[in-house]
Amino acid sequence: MKLINILSEVGSNKCEELFGKYLFGEYQQFYNSVKEKNTDFEQQTFDQFISWIERSDGKRAITTKYAIELLKCKNQFPKVLNPNQTVYYRAFAFMSDSEIFHNIKTVEDELVYGDNRNWYNDKLVDAYLSYVNRTEYYQPLSLIESWTNSKNSAIKFAKQVKHISTQLIKRNSRQATCILKYTGDDTEMLFNPKFMSKLSSDIGYGQQNEILRVSANKQPIKVQISYIPLLPEFGHFRDLNIPKDRHEYVKNQILNKWKSF
Image 1 (cartoon, rainbow, N blue to C red):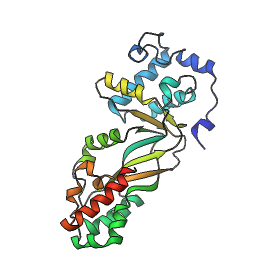
Image 2 (cartoon, helix red, strand yellow):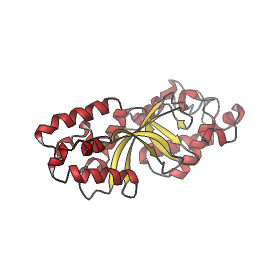
Image 3 (spheres, rainbow, N blue to C red):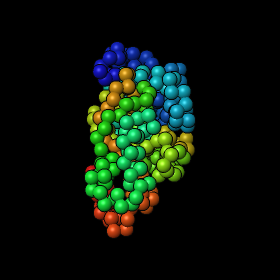
Image 4 (tube, one colour):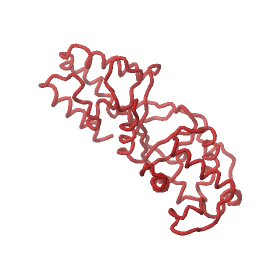
């Protein structure tokens, strides 16, 4: 059951009591003029999301508490809180205890670390390349997670994170990092990415296009996944041990799948 259906309904009066008539009304850079003084709770909420941008994973439980209150008030403050999107992306590392990790690494062992003649085995190659734009179920690890409406932002984030962007192709890796793509309504999604981009840019972290997914029960969701080492954008395609006369075929297969991701 989606969070919006199980939270107690909050009328406009309750939202106004917590946040005033203009959400984060003192943030004049977004509103272009000072609308009103923040309430104490509103200022605490604003400060917490500044901290979230600065530390990302910091104080997740506290951030979730404020996010849930904001989620109840999306209808009252759509300019700030409604993403108005249907497609969302996230960089995520599947760990060694997951089935997805096991499946990817099993076929990768045959192709990348095995005899490179295995690249002429169409069945094996198709199994590996199926992890570009592949439908899987993703289990959220926490009640609140960072997503984005921009595929490029997800890619940029993956490149910036040290444990994702370095030595992606290594046999003893304990993770399989993918870009996730979720298509659906914005019921559990919080924040207009334009607002979050403006806020993150103003405090020196660049335009991140961040959207938060707030899930009450961490139910799995259906997503498309693309395994990062297979994607040309990451510059690791050359490390896959592909024979020269097979290289063009494999590359075209990947590009065709990636275009529709």
